[in-house]
Length: 299
Image 1 (cartoon, rainbow, N blue to C red):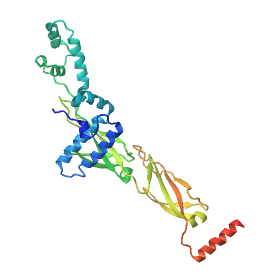
Image 2: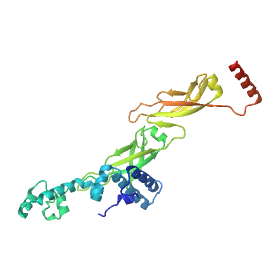
Image 3: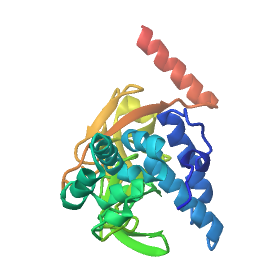
Image 4: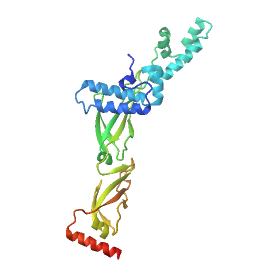
């Protein structure tokens, strides 16, 4: 198998930082995503390579093995074990002793044989290796993350339908077992890791399970009090405004926030900040009344 240069695929330098790797991956993943390039086999193949490169270089331990062993990084432990065995056997005093140990020693592996050209001593055993893990990014609107629902994504021409739990967070990753690359030597398939990117909402701001919103009220309700209707994620509710409400005042609606991840029936809170709208373009009558009020307040 030809060597795969993951750094070249992500268009980064070998000295790239973790942040630079993440930034490069997100940029290229969006560019070549199948949803943006439908029926484009070349873009689809590029997208697969980008995910594979990110899976390796985005993990410090895997990256270290890749830098040392190239595309065979997943078998690094076998290489290291083989190197240790080679050093041990090099101390053998005779080929006869070496060959005898090679035939009878349980620790002597076929992988070692393939590395150092000793295939004649292979006992026909195969070594099972787990397939490569795949990674992908899925974008959601905040409304999508509010309820548990199913979604289908396509990986290697296969449609995978899975459940997204309510309350999933921006940047959170979930694992779908057995949907990665094919294993070798009878080994299991790798896994699929999906990282979620949740778009900002135009009205609500989210902080884990709590929601924040700014509500505008007119000067008269702020001064005299009253009632307004506010929107929440599960419908509209009526809210009482106390007389003398100040600009920037906050109220909490308990249980009207976001679902708590994998805790059915539990919700955060909704925090409302009031913004008072000062009237403009006053009529002559309104100006007179406000002037009269100001005199009463200062008398």
